[in-house]
Structures are given as C-alpha cells and as structure tokens.
Amino acid sequence: MPSATCGTSERPGVDPARFRTLMRRFAAGVTVLTCRGPDGPEGITVSAFTSVSLRPPQVLVCLARGSRTLSTILTEGRFAVNVLGWQQRELATRFADRTRTPAQRFAGIAETTLVTGSPVVLDALASLDCLVAQVWPCGDHIVLVGDVVAGSAERLDAPLLLYDGEFCKPAGQEAVHGGSTAPAVCALRLW
Image (cartoon, one colour):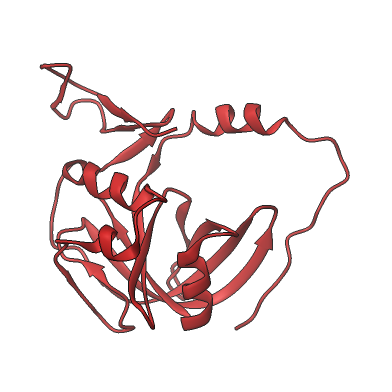
C-alpha cells in the first residue's frame, strides 16, 4: 500500500473550537463507512468523503486515528462507502454512537457484498466498494484514498446532509420538523 505523510506546520493555527465552528458551516453528505474484519462487520458514520479521480475511479475518506473501524480497514485493505438518504437518519446516528458495539450498529440492517467482501447497506442511495490505495497520517486523522472496484445505486431519496451539527435535507424537499412540514429542515443535533 503506497503511503505519504501530511506535513506539520509550526505556524499558528485557528483554535480547535473555532475551527469546528467554521467547518460546521460546510454542508456535507453523510455516509457510513463499512468493512469486514475477523470478528465480523464494522462501520462508522463519516461526512469527510469526496471523489478524487475519475480515471482511475478513486474516493477519499478521513477517519480519526483512534477509530476501531480505521484499524480494521488498514489491516484488511478494503472498505465500502454507503451514501445515506434522508430516511436513514437513525442509521447515521447509530453508526456515530461510540458506545455501541459493531454488532449493535449492524443489528437488523439488510446488507450484502459486492467485490471486496465489505458490507454494503442494501438501501443506501449509493455504495462504493473500495480497495485501499493510499494512506496519509494527517494531524489527528488518517486520510484514506480508495480505488473504487464496484458500486451500486439502486434507490433515490433526498440526500442526508450534515450542516451546523444537524441532519438536514435540501430546500424544496418536504420534511417534518416540530410537528409541521417545512423545507430545508435540520432535524437532529449531533455535536
């Protein structure tokens, strides 16, 4: 597996609390990153996800260094990215809950595999099955680039977004909030 390092800087940086506030102003899609280890499936909610390249097809994800899922991905060399829709807010919350075991996170979830053996959530908006291509330690996170070897996109729904620490959906898409119906709703504070 090729790897690189992320440079460190001695320059003064933005205070971590301020940086979190700044980054919360960027709306991001919500995914569940999954892998299969020797003890079964593992997964975690991730919003730091983007495409990198069309040729070859590659994606980038960032995980905290202490993540149990990260350790398994690095050992196994593969993962799947499951893009969640608005109706999957509970799933995103469940996989973000650090107190849950992997078995509790996957309980009752319909899953399959594509090529790598990583679990793929059957009703995700899209699933990308990946082999680890590059790994970069960067600050308190690890950046992973994955070669996309298979994918599935079988369902349409409003996308699940994270904005200002809350789950949201795009304006113009109906959603329930506080007992009424309104566009551009943010429904659940995460942090």
